[in-house]
Image (cartoon, rainbow, N blue to C red; front, side):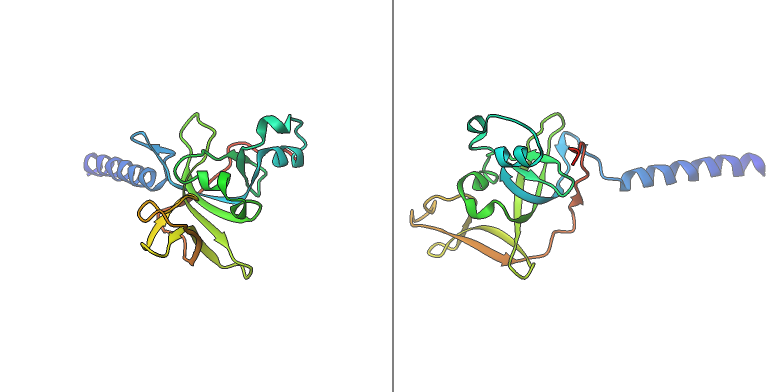
Length: 175
């Protein structure tokens, strides 16, 4: 009887360990980074460094922006198709945001996929740009891709998606 029970217990323990490991989020899966939720405020890097007590030449950093998290982690934002809006539109800076995005291993830049801002009553809003003529969303300030007319900043109440995990800081800057 013991010859049968022991191997069965070993198989059950192995299956339980595999199932528990499968539930834990992985930083990268098959080369694809994990989508995470980043919270904080998007600020100019020169202002954030000054606030954190780090001396730098502000003119060298004048166009750079980063997310300053509640843990005082400073994450530079990549100026790609989505992050570029923070470089162009000051209305998106110096305000509370939640960003869905990712960081590739070994790269400090935050790649933004979705922007959430908050209204004066603290309600979460997905934020993008919108063409009222063509009814298409856009992700940076420029004429509409379709009709070439001006677009507007748009805020829509929206909950967070369920498939996003909370970002865990890697490093903190002491207060």
